[in-house]
Image (cartoon, rainbow, N blue to C red; front, side):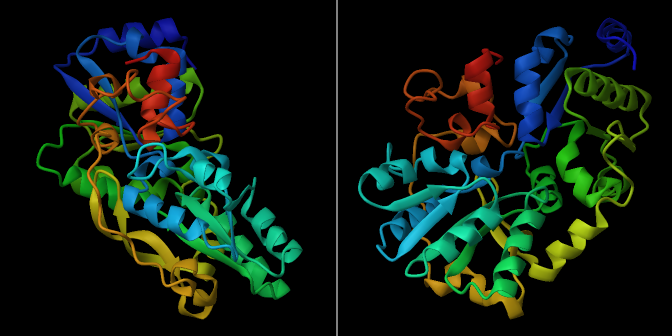
Length: 353
């Protein structure tokens, strides 16, 4: 791999006008902020954050419904830690607050931990909040299959799992879309393979590079994207060959398809997108928490949070009037300031805006 200095000199030599590139992975967002890559690039090259943080794309009305369900004394909510501090439509209201009010909310480190929690609490219903993209979805599917095989009937999953391709298509269909190349998420690509992103150049003429997560990976991927743009030759390149194969992880794909199938789903900032979420296959719907507890989403309530615009590249974190003032990691207004992969949290922590 060439040095950072060599890559930056090569970028500076490219014949380019103004270019917007978008990363579609929260880990990339945090790595870009931490390494200060934005400050190293020419002024005509801008890096935008996309819908790559699974907690951030979960809409407020879903969070509100989760908060309501958490107050049922028969239920234990099991979740990854990030979700506990995500506020609903009411500022300050979160699973963390509901736990202080008496709700049973447990942090787990894997979906199978939630299955074991259900086994340990046979008199309660354990609901696992299945948040994530294709990266974590196979683990959630494996937990459901484990619960089925062990006969654990007091376990269910609220599937907030989402698929990247439909979101990118919806993003590119927006009338104010202004991105010339995508940094594709390496973690997702380890599961779905290079083939999962071939539609970008094939159908949209969009330059795309699957990138690793070290600063050098990202900087090289930015150069590869800019070189495609300068040469007018859009294609898919795989910079992350040490982890991503053309076909991806077929075993994980089979596990996923054994449990879930695509369904229409809501995204913060993008609205409802057909076939963009993962719902249960018919034979496993007994594990679907939404159906088991007859969940009805409340009407969306307006908030001052601009997270939806940040994760669709229409606004930088610093351009939100709440950023660093009313909204901080200690007192967040929206999920982009809460999640360890959130664009606002990254900008606040590293002052990379």
